[in-house]
Structure formats: C-alpha cells, structure tokens
Length: 484
Image 1 (cartoon, rainbow, N blue to C red):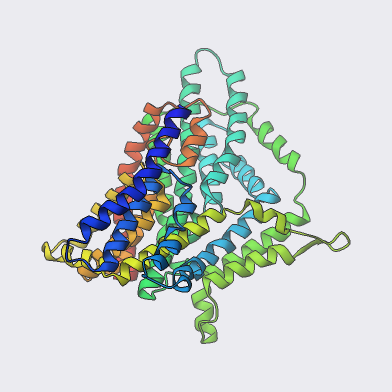
Image 2: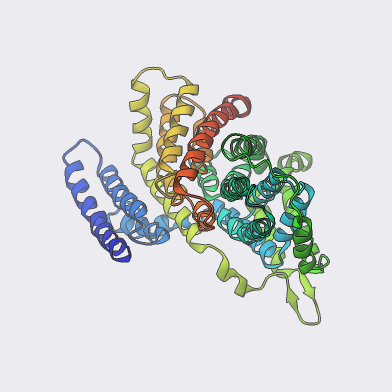
C-alpha cells in the first residue's frame, strides 16, 4: 500500500507542472489574454496537486506567491497581500479561542454534561453524543471534535458490550454502528452553523468580502446556519435511529456511572475553565450582536476579525496565577494551531484574485448567462449537488477555493446575489458523509471497527439527499429573504 501511495505521489508531482506547460501552450493559441492563460495553467497545476495530495495542501497554496511575480502577473508585494487578508486573522482568532477550550478540557466537560442530560437509553445516548459533538464542532475543528468524542463513545460501547445478552447482540451492533456514524456526521454538520466552524465557510466569506466588499456577518450566517445545522442533525438522527440502525435498547445499566466517573475525573470546574468560558462567551456575544452594537454607537467600529483576534489575545494575557506568571495560553500552545489552513486560505484568495483580474470569473458568468434563463432554485440545487459530490472525493477547503470563484462568476452573469449561490455551495462542501476517506471525522470513527464501508455509504447517500433538500430550502427561504 505504501509503495502504491508513493508511486501515485510521484506521478502527481510530475503531472502538476506537466499540465501547467501543456495548458500554457494550448491556451496560448486561443483568444485568451496572457494573464488568463497563466492563471488557468497554474490552476490546473494546483488542482492536480490538491486532488492527488502530491505535495502538502498548504505548500501547493504557496505557488501563486512564487509564480505570479515570475510571470509578471503581480509584484511580490501584491502576490503576498492575500496571505495576510483580514479573513485569515478571523480564523486565526477563532483557532486561538479553540486552543483555550481544548487545553483546559472545557469542551470535554460540556460534552459529558450534554450526554448526561439526554438520557441513557440507546437513542438517548446517540442524541447526547450528536448534540454535544455538533455544538463543539461549531467552534473547534471537526477533526479535533471527533478525536475527543471517540474515546468517550468507545467507553460507552465497551460498557454495553459487557452487559448485553446474546439475544440482544443484534441490537447492540446496530447501536454501536449508529453511535459511531452519528458522531462522525455530527462533527461535520456542526461546522455549518458558524463562519469559523469549518474552513469552507471562511473561504466563502473571504471571497465575497474581497470581490464585492459585501459583509456576511457572524450573526447573519448563524441565522441561516443554525436552523440548517439543526434540521440536518435531526435528519441524521432519524435516518440512523429510526430507519437504518434502530436499536430499541432501553436504559443502559452503568452508563450514568461511566459519564459521572469521567466528570469526576475532570473534578470541579477550575478557575482556568471559568476564565476560558468567560472569554468565549464574551467573544460570541460581540460576534452575534456586532451589527446592533455598531448601530447603537453609530459607527462600524466592531468587526468580526477584530473581535476574534481580541478573544484570541485575551487567551494569552488573562492570568491563571499571577505568582507563577501562568496564563490561559502561552506561545508554545501555538504549535497546535493549524497554520497550514491559514496558508491555504491565502493561496486560494491569491489565485481567485488573479482569476478576477484576468476576467475569468466574469467570462464564466457571461457564458452561463448566454445559455438562457435558469431559475435561482435550479442553480442552487445544481451547484450544491456538484459541491456535495466533489467533497466526497477531495478536500472541502480545496473544493471551495476552486469552485466558489466560478460560482461567483455565474452569479454575476445572471445578476443573482453572489451569497445566494456561494453559501449553499459552502454548506454542501461540509456534507461529506459517504466514505471514510471523504473527511477526517469519517476516517477516525471508521477506525472504531463498528462501521463498514457499505454501512457508511448507505447512510451517507440518504443523508446527502436530505441535506441537499434542506440546504436548497434554507437558501430559497431564509437566504432569499436576507440577501435577494
């Protein structure tokens, strides 16, 4: 397996620059401008490396910084500017806050308390895990959430396995499969709710801000994102517990003690957790009510990025113990911050800016508009469906980085609000439910041994279908009301 992977990686490494050269010479024979030729050739190179992961995805994102100046598309300063875009610092601030939650185990305490509240029947436990996983995934990465929830879920299934009778073994198998699938899916679904919940959301908001100077605020995203997240989560719960894997297990003896034991291990809430909770709550308050507060003071003083970075910085300057000079976070904690994601945003913004400057985005929109009238509803369904299919095969960040600028061109060509088309594409990019390789949470929970590929695909197809319907309804109702 390793040798096959290495061979594919070498092929990908060679294929990327080879396609750049081929595209460059072929496109040079067309009526495209020099800038458009270089951008499309570079896009072919980057997509190849992103899809094959021949080079680390963030490293591929650095190519525009090198090739734009070399091919005289931009100065080094201009090429580097998108890597410092304000939207990148919005996500960095969110990452810092998430590091504080994780370092002091506040996310685990929240999860355990939610699970305890939802009951100890088979379906109650699944609901508790889904709600806590989705809630936490709204603020920290879906991968970190899945990694945190797996050992807790494994403890519950191990406990039940000891207690279950031979007669009830089929019920246990369905419960265990449903539990692991529900956690994997909820980790991805939760990220839909907030701008910082998952990278595709940040990419989409960044493009809209950069190209249209249109602000998608934290609060307005949540107006669509939270109802959508809850309805997809409810669909997931029904599909797993009522349609595909109904366990009908009654209250599980010993599960209350297990959850209580894990909470006891955490001990009483510490002063570190209390301070993290205060910073987190205050940051969320300002994100949600930013527009109201700006209207109150008569100025656009507050900005989502400024609020995020303020929350992040507070994690470093809020003391735990003045005597020992210890703080909630110190700089060594920043090694756990996913710097590669920030570079990827920068590369995507740089490439998309080049596409905009070369007129490619407008060209796509013009070509679509010439095909005749197409209803907004049809476009939302079609583009979301394409995004949902592609996210099963490639990184959702790479997908939105490549696809959203094209969607914006379509919106321009048909005189549709760019948000109406781009936002559902971003939502759909988080709906990777069919395969273990589609997204890290799927792979992490697949490793539990309770899920087969066939089971994941069966559940994933149904959930994708429901998600596509719900995304389309959300954008054609709430989205049209807010942005049409």
